[in-house]
Image (cartoon, rainbow, N blue to C red; front, side):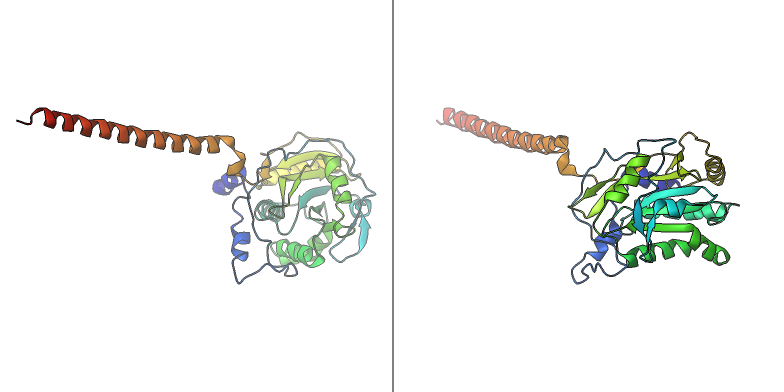
Length: 293
């Protein structure tokens, strides 16, 4: 438990081991294979990916999306009803952090007396505007399988995965993310997104009541956050900010300076040894010449 938290705090997506494995020769990435993650590429550093908390902000209820069934829907239609919402931002090919966060969420759902689809709902907005219905559906089913079978049908109805209304159009995703202060960045060299991990609690009217960060969510914290969202009572953020980003050694000037310093130091040391050796041998030669009878 503690180890996985440290992994998340340290950088989190540099691990992309699963994606790297899928990119090996002879096992090319197939974008139509919902079970296959995207290949890893060069690393990148994105320290400006944060959450700018917007308590009491109203999400854009007119934002339009597609469900995993391919049906057009507004965010307001999804949020309609007398129960609060847990909003997340994720995508299926995320190499590490999304899985850590959603696994932590599912684990907490199994422990709660409250049930998703009954006392609250979950809405996951897909960050990738090119996400396919097949990938999103496989992602949803993967996490629903961790919920007890007796509760799965209700949970399926209560956990909605939303995709871009039109493939490639990220405008509605951005509208919702901007409204709640969730920043993220697309990394073209990796074909991935740098993003934080946050559960954003919404009241029945769609206003932000709390931010809970991290990849593990305690039963009491979740119960309190859902209950307060139900009565539209804002609460102080909880947890630690985790971000999915990629460390790029080439972006750090200190590393380059260090390598250059070692190279210069090594060259100077060799020059010193060569010069000292030359004068030492020269001195011995002069002494021998002086003692020739």
